[in-house]
Length: 462
Ligand code: BES
Ligand code: MN
Ligand code: MN
Image 1: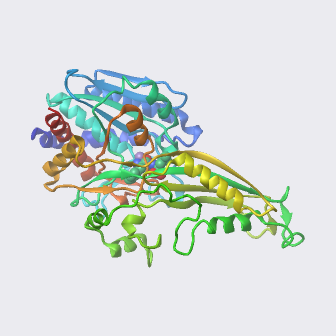
Image 2: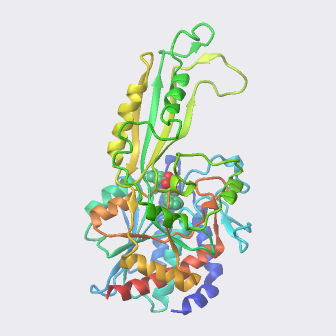
């Protein structure tokens, strides 16, 4: 197994070039104009799995984007690892904030990535991290080091809510049967502080529309006499948090599991510099729910954030107008045991009740999912921990993340298996932002660490 290092050394340029080619295809799932590129990416992933040594690879049709499935079954009596990842990416806008075009990957060094990082949309989320598994598979298959069965399921709608995968999983339980699910689509604390993600937040994402008068009005002739939808919407949104930054929706916290003081003390031991955090974001102070630390606010606590807000005149110069409509997109990050559909209903009821008589409110739910927390005493976690210890020389720290991969809770419900989140990105890699990047060192370290997971998982399963 020590040959994995030399195999990577020997093939590292090709590993990088293959990933760069994959990243060049703009597989933006949110924008239907990119559908041909989405399909092209699915084909490219399929081909890469064939080349890596999977026996059966197929594009599974769904009502939406195809799911790439591949497998190598070496012995029915051995355990099976199911690898999940996504080949779709977020839209790259705003384009003018990128230092280089989002789909023309370049390698540049940064303070945290002295060995270089690939700058492009999808470099870290999730093409780079997904492709680590393809290359780890190639190594294992080519060197007779695959100790168990493996299945790959790479989808193309993660960034838009995994609707087709939610359709696919319950219909293919037997095909997807596994002993553990392995995902690299999260991050770690730092390159010298390895960590394993043990939790993801759930999500409820809604869009709201506030309608006032039946047409845009002159803000002088009508101003002050009718409800201005933008004024009303911003006031309603502002009232969703109280002076302690608690969320004011009745019932919102009812099912939240509070962590014990022991658990919180354990969390607080993870290395974290508030000064460095503020400096990296160029903010004078952090902000959030009273009574909780920054790391608690962004992982074990539920939150509500406006993700976009629009209405009225936003062109050049001034136009004196009261808009007929105002809109906002709002995300709520959820924690165990909040139910996303219930939260969506609570939000809707509350938001409708907040509206003054002079406006009408429409709430449209987008998508959602439950939070997920994985135990650290499972074979899967132990195998991952040993794998990191092997390649980083340090025991990784278990850490709950604030991000969401809503499909993970569905995997547990439908496939009855636990997910292990071996993420190799850094929070500063700017996923979903301009100048997203993924460290070359991280990419290669991931490829090196993954085969050890397979080895330890198979051994511990005996
Ligand atoms: N890979 C991310 C989630 C993530 C990133 C989790 C870093 C933990 C650490 C995933 O692609 C993502 O962006 N998820 C969305 C939700 C989805 C339904 C659009 C998110 O968290 O906003
Ligand atoms: Mn992702
Ligand atoms: Mn993402």
